[in-house]
Image 1 (cartoon, one colour):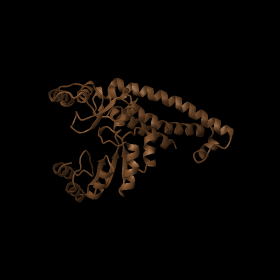
Image 2 (cartoon, rainbow, N blue to C red):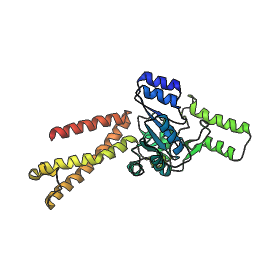
Image 3 (cartoon, helix red, strand yellow):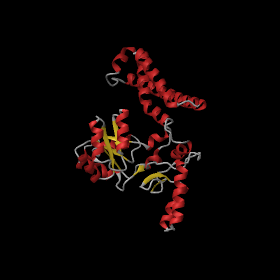
Image 4 (cartoon, helix red, strand yellow):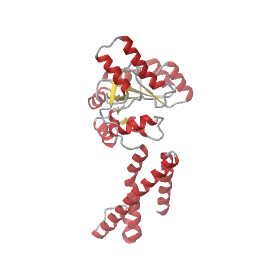
Length: 308
């Protein structure tokens, strides 16, 4: 974060600025703060966290070595609690978080929130190219690598033949000419616009957990709500005496349980069928799925509330 970048953020009225890779310096932090901007700094060690707190940032992101992009050498699990103990400002966790389990674990470590990137790279709205998205969804936990080939600093990224060749050359102490050429190949395949697949991309180790697009992920996150809503509707329809009371208590007898479970089972099957049909429909037409999903869910919620 340079002074010029800070000036641009102030001019554009950006409310929150995240800094990373290098210490922006107290003068830059103060400039942003004086403009009413919240500053959050991504840090890899306790020492960095303390320094950024002293410079006046509002919060820090303790980013472990599992994260994608520029990384340090300390893993998230030991890093987060040590940073939490070392500073008085809010601490967010990053690195190795890809679902609700990691989210809950971050709170157990003392973080107040998380920064999660790799999992959302598979989203249809992401600008990740098709090569990168397909690679991400097929990756294992061992398919990332930390290298200096991309930027000169340590970056965790998708393991590609170009990067492996560069790292092998370093390991066997190849001459500088060969290493320079291999580095040029890595950076060229990332930045050259003529390269259709743009084969280099940062990614965290949670890439091995990504097996579905963000659309499907969101659908299955929302399915319990859909099931509960439909189940309650069925209960209210077929058992009007107890339907009005069912939302505020557990079923009182076996008959209520039977009706409720039947409603859940039927709505679950219907929801699965609707999800499968809808995803196939949007893919065939090349629409942006998540935008359509939001509209459909919004209409569904509105109908359900009006039926209330």
